[in-house]
Length: 400
Image (cartoon, rainbow, N blue to C red; front, top):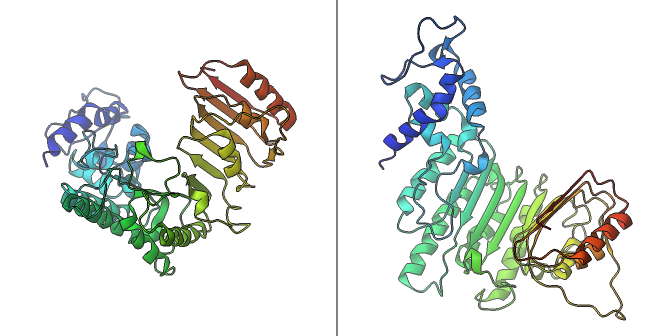
């Protein structure tokens, strides 16, 4: 695929040279630069070091970030081919024979896979996905599947092809369900049956290692998600039975003993009209990545009595104005909340006025450029901290 030369150059210039600078040389490649003989005797030929030590040197030198160890690109609208910056595992495996052995024996380098399904590149995507899954062995997997292409229907030829691509990748991921650590799936309704089938065989597809889950079922693109994509037949065909599918799937995922984090999507509350009281008790972290108002966020937080960390990245919808003589709802008490991260373009006063968090340790408020500084928010923040009586250790106010 024309990847060898660019990968080799990349490593020679950056990562490999850093390893050499640390006091090591390599004699497995004719292009390798050796250190002069007069260098101190402490210099050791890298070939004389055990593979385990080489692996640790590489991992420490490049400071591997799991989020960048991807096998395909993940941006909406991309064609799904290999990224211009190949994952470290692929780069390392093409330096030379020795470093290839290091890469192939370091399973953790292959455990994060991100795929944007594409019928045009399906063969290549299946190849790389299988390769990464094989080299990951039995290590916990971080999987991302983003079917972000907008489709008006599945009856068209192109629609069927894209759905087949999504189903093919999802089937591979499901085959390794027992190794899932984090999953982030955005799929169309036509692929939901694969997840439902998985729930019918809990012994075969036991997600005992699952820690974090995000499941979005929508034909809309990531950036054009309706405010409530589960409420109308436009987002779902025969949505009534789809709700039952989603409820079964989520109950299966939430049953994982180590499950501690989920991402909440609009309309999620419609899946469980009357959720079991203890369904979300074990969850400690909540992510909300769609446009949301203070009122909706407070309603959602009420589901999570044991929540410790809340991340809201699109606090954009204006709150409903409440008249002075109107009765206010009781403030929501979250005893366990320790971290609150907000990225907002509207006033956050309604949220602070509706919440009490006595265990809060870290509060970050990032105001977008479109949001003007508001003294009302400042006063609300003071009231919130005073009434919560928390021992705040870190307060970050960015552009506020």
